[in-house]
Figure 1 (cartoon, rainbow, N blue to C red):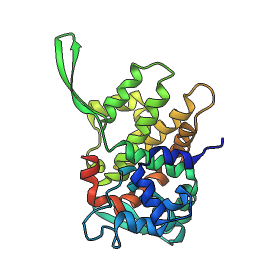
Figure 2 (figure 1 turned 180 degrees about the horizontal axis):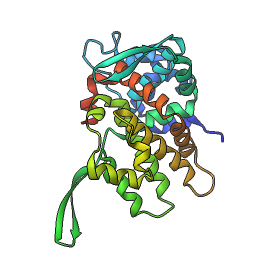
Figure 3 (figure 1 turned 30 degrees about the vertical axis):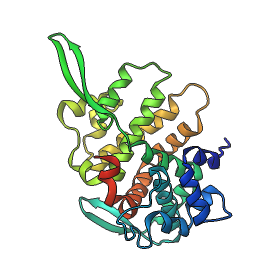
Length: 273
């Protein structure tokens, strides 16, 4: 499947974004400009955050795109990566070529950029639902896996691939951008049992999983289901989702690196977690 990644980026970039790229890396394509050292300096400043204490006034999409593309470049030049090993704990791991190969694919890079940009605005609030005892207030949030997984019971077959894709996105976002929080706030009890049932997992398949490994199992399954549950040929996005499902751990580790190097100082501002 041929994908015009250059066009995909142009559809998301603002006029000021394109002007910055043209000035920072003149005479190059948008994709090449996103990975240029001059673009990194223009967006993040000479010491990553610059004198202003934050990125340049560009769209979050461009900021994430530069972060992902520069991480891809960094991985191609590195011998090790600082691996998340627990809250506030990072250990050096040396299988960088595997991660570099995964992120070298332009469609996979775009997939990660688009995922990050999609979480700058999330829906949450209170809804009313009818029960046997009358109406009940129920909180909902796009950042709650159980709320999202509940849609699998109410949507038709044609909509399930999209729900599975979004569930996979959520698992990757939580483990990649907020690993410390996610490892401490795992689903338990009845909520966990319902989440596993909706995801088609038996208790035996998850009973030995702890920390991020639980969400890695769920995210991998959800992404694979996104590609496999579609009727007919999968779109480029769903095909990429299935690839992310097969290598969820690699994708999570890459996103941890992107977060630690570029996104950590402003996570709360961008994502409001």
